[in-house]
Each structure stands twice: as structure tokens, then as C-alpha cells.
Image (cartoon, rainbow, N blue to C red; front, side, top):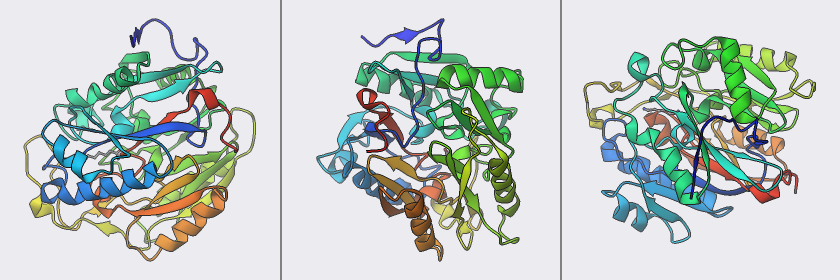
Length: 373
Ligand code: KQY
């Protein structure tokens, strides 16, 4: 039976979060359907989610969790290789409400079930209620028969952290020190909890993210580890780009940083879109009190950085932008040993995130350290 672990932390028990580039046993997604977030009854978003899931299942096991109401539709649209299981959720951002998996050196795997409050709770969260999302991590762990740590008094989303699997965690001040998450905790208390629950020794803080109104600046739109000692960082030298300053500052900070092992980081530049991606079709999104209204012409957060690393491949967002091909080339240079698979995901960007935000990789606990093969 899957247990809830209380009183110890992954670090105390010898567990750590592996890097995304380590071997995986599979990947999880949720099915989008809420009409007050996704345009056109979520049908275009569902088509984009299908494309992402089908790209992943060519390389590793894929599970899509879906409500009872949408089960038959999802089952019919997804190929038989994809496992489809019924699960309630408030929306479809499993990076943020799903478990963060941690492993030990003896083939053990557990989940971290962070408290989830829809990116800021009643302070500046994106919807209410969020109770179904908050149960997703436990349910995934139950399905996999994995014990889980619940951080009852610590709010965090998976999209706000990246790790190198060797002791370093990367995050942003804008998100982790935001008023809507853990307002009574000091920066040093937050660092301690991050290190305890991710099995890390050092926290690298970037200042800002690029989506203050959405997730309060998740790191997964700005930078990530590509291998130990190497990171990718968004880059533009176009001063008119709305994210110019954030990108320049993130690149500068990472270029000066050292990781938990004392290595100076090598920083790879990843382009941003040439033109901002602007929301269309907002009139087909339901207006519901308590949910952020969306307007035509507002900037959708469309970062190539929101890619997912899986076994033998990287699944990369594409937006129909002039810089799509450049992004593919740059990511291929970072990952010469993997396929780079572009998937058109403008529709996911319209909903507020991208491929990394809608997926959650499950590490292969018995192949720890085998990422280089
Ligand atoms: O991780 C994310 N980017 C989630 C964004 C949620 C957006 C809800 N409209």
C-alpha cells in the first residue's frame, strides 16, 4: 500500500530528485477541458495535448489522466499505446500539481506531494477552487504504489524548480518569495525546505521569470539544466522584446554562478520568439467570476525553454514563429545525442503554459545515473 510519509524528508531518507536528463520510466499528463481557460471549448487544446502525448509515447510510456466526462473522448483520440486513466482535476498542469519524484541509490522511488494553491491562492491565484488539482499528486502515487511526502505547510509547483540531480536547484525569487505562496517563510527557510525535499545542497536564485501574471515567474520558461555543469537560458538582444531585461539578467546571473559541486556553469543561449505570440479567440473563453479574464491581443507566454527532456529526445514547443527553426538548431546543439521533436503548441501557450507545464516525467529508479547512454 502507498503510504503518506510524515516526520522525515527525502534528504533525511537518502532520496533526491533526479535531473530531467536522467533515465525515465514514463511520463504523465492531464487532459484539458475547462472552458474558462481554454478557447473553443478546449477542443484545439485537446488536439495539441494529443500531439504532445503522441510525440512522447514514441520514446517512453505515457499516461494521460482525464475526468469521467471526457474519458471516452480522450480514449478515442489517443493511440492505444497511451494509458488513459480516470482522474479529477481542476485543470491540466501536472508539472505543477503532480508529484515530484525522488529516487535513492537502491532502486527506491517516492513522490513529493507539494501543497498546491493554483499559483497564489486567494492572494493572486488563477482559479478557485483548486482542491482536485491538489489531490493529483497523491492519486498518481497511489496508482504507481509509491509512498509520498506531503508538504502540508509549504506551497510549491514543479514548474518553479529545476535540478541538476547533483545537489543544485534552480529557481526564481519572483515565484518562491511571492506573497501568495509562503508569505511567512524567510528566504533561508525556503532554501532549507527545497534542499530537504529535493535532496539538494545549493539553491541558485534568478531574480525574475517572464510570466508575473500567470505563475509569478516559473523557472521553466527561463532556464534549465541540460547536463551537470551546463544550463540553457533564454536569450534576446532585441531591446524591444518584452522579456529583454529578464533574459539579460538571467544570463548574467547564470554566467557568474557555480553549482553545488563548485563548477562554474556553461550557459547555452536559447532564442526567444521573433514576435510576441498574441492571444486570439478570447471571446470563446467562458468568463467566470474568480478566474483571470483573457483578452484578445494580450501576450501569451511562448518560451522555447518550456521543452521536456525525455529518453532519447527533447520535445520542443513551436509557435509558427520565424525563430522556430533556430530554436530547434540550438536545442539540438545542446543535446546532440537526442532527437529534437518540435510540436506546434501555440494553443497551449494561449492557456498559460507549454510542454513542460503539461507533463511530469517519472524517473526510472533502477537506472539511476544512466542518463549518458
Ligand atoms: O505552469 C504553468 N505555466 C501553469 C499556468 C497555468 C495557467 C492557467 N491559466
